[in-house]
Length: 98
Image 1 (cartoon, helix red, strand yellow):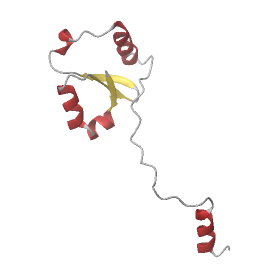
Image 2 (image 1 turned 135 degrees about the vertical axis):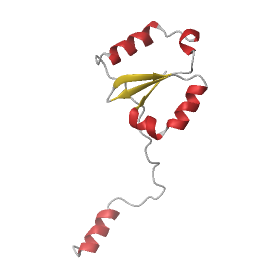
Image 3 (image 1 turned 30 degrees about the vertical axis):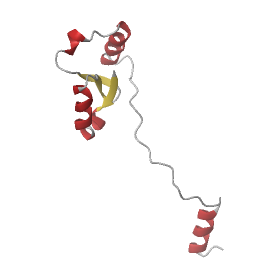
Image 4 (image 1 turned 90 degrees about the vertical axis):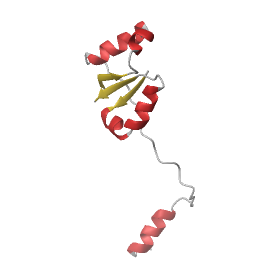
């Protein structure tokens, strides 16, 4: 079971629906509070939730806990490497502070 925020769901709807089609279940959150579940049709009977999953959903729906969302994709580290102080030296040069 995964969690996804509303904003990310809007941005990744096609991918998320493909995951759901393949059997994945998503808890949709709004500011950390579960507001919906996305699961394949008929999967509630076929895929019973564990007691801990049920407790998590119940507590999140009641606002008693917040479910962590996946971290946003961060930028890859730059392949450009310069010596320490290079940026400051460049700023000083452009400002005439040499």
